[in-house]
Length: 93
Image (cartoon, rainbow, N blue to C red; front, side, top):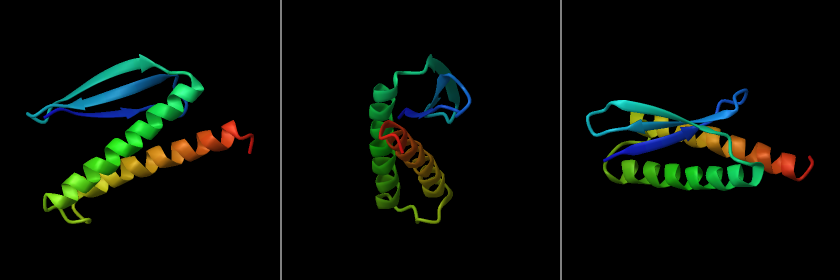
């Protein structure tokens, strides 16, 4: 199974794709930053993907306090915060 996590550092113009392979190795790719509305759509997709991942991890027997669930939860928090900031910027708040 291949797991892909997207992240953009706030002060950077590139998006980083972290791809984890079955053998637990990581491959890092970069992409130029998408447009503002497109970015919101990507964030929504990332949020849904991370929520599903966290649910799968919990249903497969991992406790909410396990490292894998906490890591996913932290990524989810970051994505939700980014999404909310962008929504506020779009609404002029």
